[in-house]
Image 1 (cartoon, helix red, strand yellow):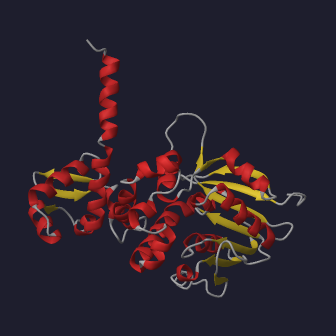
Image 2: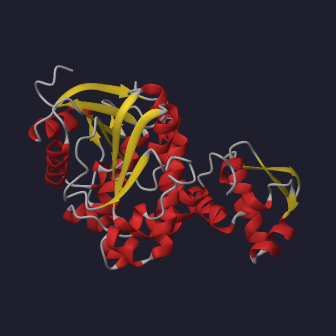
Image 3: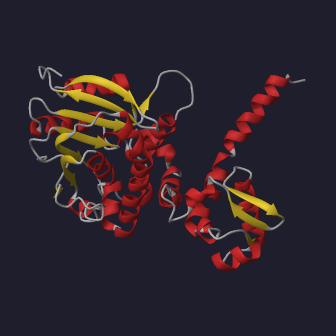
Length: 340
């Protein structure tokens, strides 16, 4: 007879293996906009099925599974409502992650069907799934490119407050956000430090969809299109890179960092804002994202020691590793001899 420990271990493995069922249900709920339909209160399964053009029985099964995870609740048989967690699937919620989750279902899940390719070769599986590299796919598919920008905005909106609170951003000076997407994080920093100016730098087709004007920062922030492997805006006092380096190989990261060093002044600082992998076996989102980056793009999350090694190779000195109240950490780097 098996021991209780062995039985518990088997059940735990089976539960882990079933995780994809809940993830796929969540993807579909986000794609169909179920939370938006429930924003005014509970609805019946039949009503929701009519509005989403789905089968009532199968939809009920999916929503009941997600209710078991705390996303929805079933206050009476066949009627569903939002929980506090599910509210964040609404498109209009200030901390919405709907676009991120829906795009994950369309893109990440498909790429993960080729995860064995990444395991065998060490190359990202995205091209095997979609026929071209990730960034080229976003460029050639503007709707998905715009969705990706929105997803990055969602991440920055959720994480930005914690980042601004964790780091003593300067009260004055020029802040350059390299690979800054639509400028959500940079806008948060500039709004918190009203005497600073900024430069938003990313690919031309990315920065043209920026939110700098909407944030009322046009007079304080330049928007510059360019290539991260090319010439970066010079003479910034502080350079930011959030969720940029995890998409590249070590060799590419060193090239990017050297380009950044070339643009910096002797006393400039550099902040790498990334999911830094902690030591030990404790669960941490960075560990799952590390595997996802290997599968998606041949990139990776890194430990603090790994970032230190790459920064040192590129000519920097690491000053501090700063945790935030989010999944992100801040690696602060300076140029040797800067006195900081």
